[in-house]
Length: 239
Image (cartoon, rainbow, N blue to C red):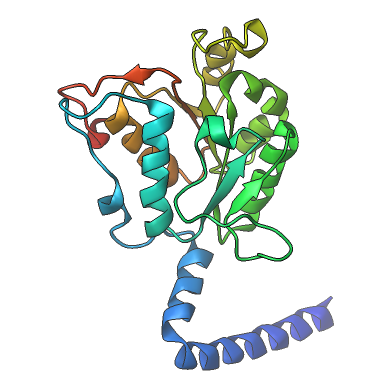
């Protein structure tokens, strides 16, 4: 065992020397690498969060969520995620997003398919590894399909962001299979799982800010299909 330790120490020293050379040649990339290794967010990222006034158009909170994601994706290059085959409904594909595929490994948007449990489990793996800040999305009621992996997020202190749209029974023609009657109660009863249901667009921005800052607590952001008026006293800071 002592020999293994000495061999590992030698490899670590060699890696540090190599990284020092890399840092000298590429200081900006090296600083970005170190920021991600530490799990820190970019400086001044909160200034990217949009805000709304009562005079602005009432948006469904899933729509304001997309606007928030557009801004956050620009400010936080390690923000990656996607949807379980519900991108047009969840509105999670941010502006300029490229799909993660074999031919585009730089892509930051993941098409998880109809695999809610696998989607949450993959995000757990990404959060545990580090270097990226994962989010994933489905209908609020369909988090039930992912609940085992969501509980692992909470038990393992992984800051995964769960975007859960269509948060009420008023969701159109889909009927009771899509109506989240008991889901909020189940999520709010789960230890170390933060569940936020924003009342308007400003609170959506605040919900994302809280979720990103809680690196050891997963967050569910429940979002509406219906338009929500922008409240006079609301702000991201008050969430």
